[in-house]
Length: 251
Image (cartoon, rainbow, N blue to C red; front, side):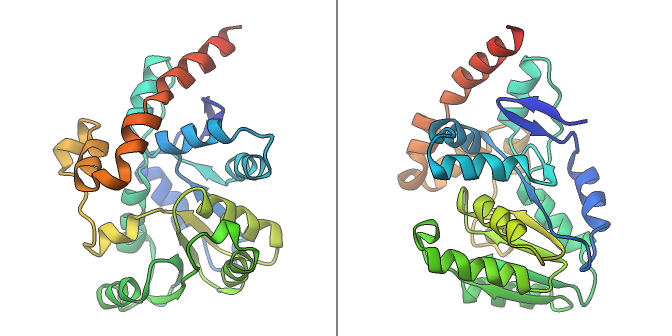
């Protein structure tokens, strides 16, 4: 049974259980998709609300996901403070498990995002897989033609797994568009920068730092110019959102 927290219904699956769920997917499975909300995602959802078109579409995209997994140790610990157990299934860890354990030789894995160098690095490392890619332009959500092209690629890819690596909220909106378009099969995962970690383009925090729930600090130190606002200005709003949500539940 899903566990609600700050407006999102989470599936109580850890990485092991989520990997086992993915193992049951085949290329003939009716299309479904997986989202992995973290603090940044929930703050964005609250800021957008449901009155603006993008906000409505994004909220619905999260609600329609086949699996909604907790990506954040900070979020899991905050939920625990309010008596809610959210097992942890970080998207980056799940992507590693998909490549190392779930995907089988000959499986087609389609990627939306990245660049040619990323695809080449993945093909060199996972030569037994059939890897295909579509690279949309920046600002895809503001470009109807680009969004339609990405949707068509995902729908027609014939992949067992479709990896959406275009960042949030683009990837969640795209997943929902592919589902709404009809005719697609397999499973899409909204994975953000996970492929950059697999190919060594970015380094994750040491495991000890991850377990302390400080991976955000490692990322901030690595890319301060890009991430300072996300982690130091927007991120702390999650505590107010959690308190307000809990107060509403008690009422």
